[in-house]
Image 1 (spheres, rainbow, N blue to C red):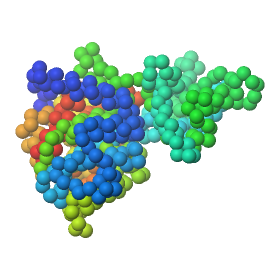
Image 2: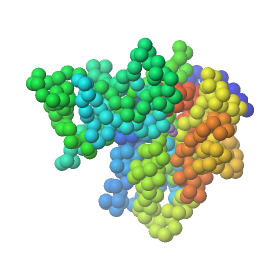
Image 3: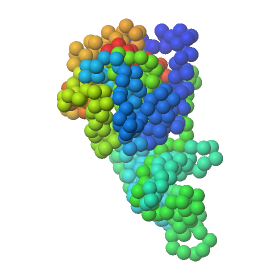
Image 4: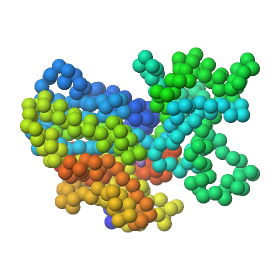
Length: 459
Ligand code: MN
Ligand code: MN
């Protein structure tokens, strides 16, 4: 059911607000390319709005009261924000949850080698990618190296105009007859996703002198030795900033819009709220692209642990307090949706696919093969959301991810639904999802932001 393009309803004032949000979104995309960088930027923005670290409350046994604004930093790779309401927290929270990791190429622990005069990084990709898309692109190096004494060295090479970049080669078409006969999944194999990082030997004649030259440079410039890569998290991402897309500047192209399109809009909607009756929360987590595993993924207990600490400091000492909070909460799992692409009609059921400019996308079912692995949002909850969105004049649409039996995907929704809260997927449509450069509609970014505000205020 097509309710028309969101652009059609905008006044001049709306367009001004939309442009402000989208310009700030592009800045966020450019400074927050990894989960660590996103965490840092999210906490910077939250602190600016008066949010305080839960650790300080715990350490100093400070009572938590309505109006308090609190953040939890989980190992520098995930964040939970809480805005305490005037009503009892056990009546449940309104929760927005997005992820801040994106598909990329990671370094292995034994990270550097030399082959025939070239120095390379040895890599293992992260998340679901079409590997052939990641060759012949300028790549930037983002991440941390932790020295044995605990010293942390932040790396960010390739984003400044004067920075060098690295990249992965591909075979020229003239000699690629055999390669082009391969299935697309085999054209570029995982072990071939190694970027060249150097080609200049040390002046002294020794074995692996190109690699040794790189090591010398790393030592001199960053105080990093080869073994330090054992305790490092280095991510290779497309170099360059987010940009307007289309001659009419109606869209945005950037790396990592799955899921920063929803992480950014959720965060900004959340920080926008001045006062609240219900307690609000915004979760921005890591590892969604590989199953939400690990201490910083949504399957970790860091979120309910934080709620337990908050309950205790609020004097909610009942052993079932945390369960009540979660049981009565309502959530939007803010994650992106695959938008209808006219060049790939056969993968989508147009009537049930999300469309650019039609607003924020709700998805009752994710999963695959007969909804396996899906979170199924209750019709009652969807009806409630329909009313809230309509009352706030938010453009929204209902969709599924592609045609039946075409494939599928999941989000963090079912992990929160496990607590018996109402959860539905709700996010921004994306073209070329999981490609190095993904595209979104500015109108959909704006409608997601507006929709999240309506949810936080009115559910
Ligand atoms: Mn996602
Ligand atoms: Mn994804």
